[in-house]
Image (spheres, rainbow, N blue to C red):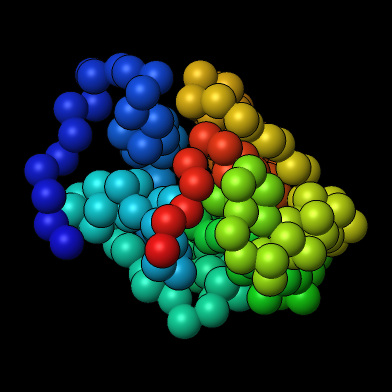
Length: 180
């Protein structure tokens, strides 16, 4: 999974994964946790190729909450990548960040919305934002590449500079229709 590092000076709204990578590196993210997801695949590859970032492949999304807590206690910043269906898997563990008040940044690729073929994705899609808000996370959402770049930059600042728990929902329309 090693590929060349993107040029951090390159900026293109068409290449939002590279922009997110640039923003998160500028925010000094040193750990990235994820359950493999096609919507995050480019960002996962970039972080995996970066020898300065520890990448953690998770068996379940809730493990990423504990890793984020440990990273913060160890003096590092982390980001957690997941799909909307994974929010349901970790909702109880999110109480750790709510009670512990440590910085948490989650980037969530949405399913069950735009041109979804899998009916099993729809219920959790509807429940993602209300569930995250009910447990105490601030939820931000982006539907375009330009909005996503600005939103993640703002979310990273809120999380890491103000010790907030933030989830950024990345609209399925931005990711594109999933094909099987």
